[in-house]
Length: 388
Ligand code: GDP
Image 1 (tube, rainbow, N blue to C red):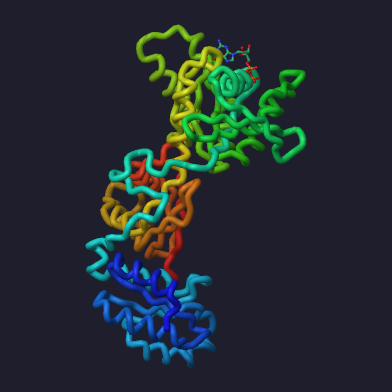
Image 2: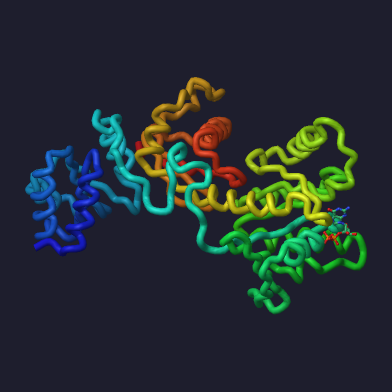
């Protein structure tokens, strides 16, 4: 008798699936459960494949014949751990005609399909860890005070991970924002040089701990070399980031001032093209509420998961002739899957044993962004190549 829970799980998966892969363990031989599942699957009338996993050494090969007994065709002998035969298996599976019709898979809980769930998708129920970073005197402490004080927030200092680190919790419209290391934000260096060094050290530390970073830029000074350095660290850390132009109250506005300012910022921090730019005044509170809404939205986008079927339909629709990549360096994408979120990371299987050209990777990331948004967060792509 099939264990009830496995049976239930399998039943749901079977109903949604366009194809069904029965995965068995080569080391165990044909287990009674495999036979029952195989029997059940054959009755569904759906295209089947048998995946015999953990085939790691040639010594096992003598025993593999017994799996044909399950009556499922084709059979793939693979090692998921060693990436043996995986790309070949996927290529075979995804070139079957019924895949092109889509699997009708539902989005997993907590995720959204762009176009159907709106831009907000999953509303985070957990708290959002926010880092306020930037060079000395840019207004970090002032922003912290505005967030914690004036806006009637509930503020609870909580002991952080280190003895001198104190976080603040700001709650707004059901969302908890944890502002990391308020002691660090308030700490000032005695000399300019010390203050600058301290701001970089703290930025690196805070970037490690946060989900979303707010990089403050002084509206009067414009973007500085130090800002660009911190922006670089934010990008490397894989965190979501907003470029927050502070002291906007001091700027004499002319038509298009925000546009011009934004262009300059983008020139200096080219790799942060995904980061939104927002103009605030920490002192007067202008757009501080909007800033929190933006943080919340960035957190949602950061955690968005794209169902595999949806992702592959999209990848199949990409017009790769638009990629400016030498033909010799082009690779065909067989299959893609999202392996993690925050930051969104995709594993892409390709037919050639050649690393992506960086401009091809950029092209791909840009297409993903056009389709799925991911405001504020870097997108990472990992490539797995077919064995030759
Ligand atoms: P920190 O070193 O980054 O923490 O900067 P502070 O918060 O101590 O701010 C440095 C100076 O800039 C202080 O005199 C603040 O009053 C001033 N300041 C900060 N934010 C604003 C702002 O939005 N507008 C104006 N006019 N002054 C600001």
